[in-house]
Amino acid sequence: MPFRILSTVLVLLLLSLTAQAQCPESSRDAAGCDPSACGSHSEAVKQFGRVCAPKVVLTHVRIIDGTGGPVLEDQNVVIESGKITAVEKGADVAAAKGTAVLDLHGHTVMPGIIGMHDHLFYIVRPNLDSRRHHDDPVLVTQMTFSAPRLYLAGGVTTMRTTGSVEPYADLSLKLDIEAGKLPGPHLDVTGPYLEGSQSYFIQMPHLTGPDDARQTVEYWADRGVTSFKAYMNITRAELKAAIDAAHKRGIKVTGHLCSVTYKEAAELGIDDLEHGFFVNTQLDTDKKPDVCSQSAGDETLARMEPSSPEAKDLIATLVSHHVAITSTLPVFEGDRGGGRPSLRQEALEAMTPQAREDFFLLRQRPISAPAPKIDPALLWKHDLELERAFVAAGGLLLAGADPTGRGDVLPGFGDQREIELLVESGFSPVEAIKIATLNGATYLGRDKQIGSVAAGKNADLVVIKGDPSKQISDVENVEIVFQDGVGYDSRKLLDSVRGRYGQY
Image (cartoon, rainbow, N blue to C red; front, top):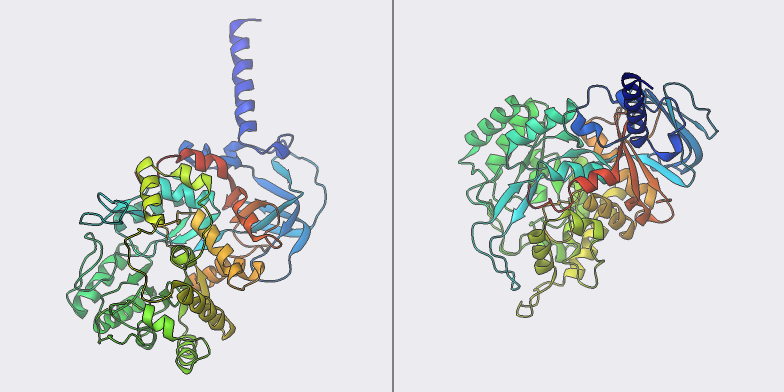
């Protein structure tokens, strides 16, 4: 055979093998499994593509549609041009040119997770030791490389940054993800923390008054941020100015508060409150106006029996003012008392050696540490009961993980754990998945495009081995994550950041 012809054959063979390598086993016979269908995505993104075809049919799959409705057994989902075009009774589909067909017996499809308290940074405590002592200052380092890949691998297709430390980096990352240059979830970029005169992180800016709050919101709204987050030491006047300025731009404001109580914030017009009911300070005995109390809300939560008049009044105020609550159970799980599940091996493998060492130092309670003044188990119990009461009263509960490297909480892994803990708190699996998907879309005003599995919506979907409706821990078994119709290989994404989280 002439050398030129032999070279051509070898090239064609390599191209064929490359195309097959990016397709699932069940679709390799489908003529349409074509990586070029990933369109304008860069090679940095295409390397994670597992299903790239003009048309994709997911056959014989179980659907948890995100609405909280009944599970749909043996269904086909048809995806074309990044959209779900049909959800229909399960049937075998013959391979055809331009179509990738996946046989998904034993698998579940659910909407992409919408992480409503997620971050793109990692908290660094210099010289942390076994007594939990560390040197100052506490630093926040950006995880622009590893965090987006971990989120996408875990099934998060849209996330709110919920307080940015490097907003320019987050805005640029958002543009690169949308342009197909980098892998990661769609981003709702929050501006810099709206913080008062003091803060925990040295990189946080400090507001000097209401005018500064208004100007800060206007400056960052002009640069493209799509939400804001107030923090622990903001004053009521500063918060009101920030809310009014944001609302004029059609932008919502959330808050991890302390100096301002939940009821005060609701009456000022805030749109969302973070960390469930853990950081409300209205019943703290040392609470003074515009000043964070010593217990930062623990005392209030311990005193606020869900059936008490104070709890009923607070929930009624939140619901009537259309204030959402973001549940972030994973970040508090380590403080609840009793046993904790071990961190998954995949999560440990994602961390740098130093991050793993810090994880184990923070996980163990120092022998010399004083006993907590308030029983953590009581706080945990009351928060779960209040979150359920809030939903029962018609409140919009959102889901997040607050993954900053603290405790057991990492991007993606933490978002899955939040769903598991919602079920542990008393919600059914389909209710918990709705909280983590459609509720987030509703808050963002994007429920017509994302958040549930329905014809006409964006094909942002998670393919899971198993049945989370019966065993919620199956939500961890993510195999493929579809974002705008392109299916990403969860394992490849995880492998690409092995040993990097905590570094960059």
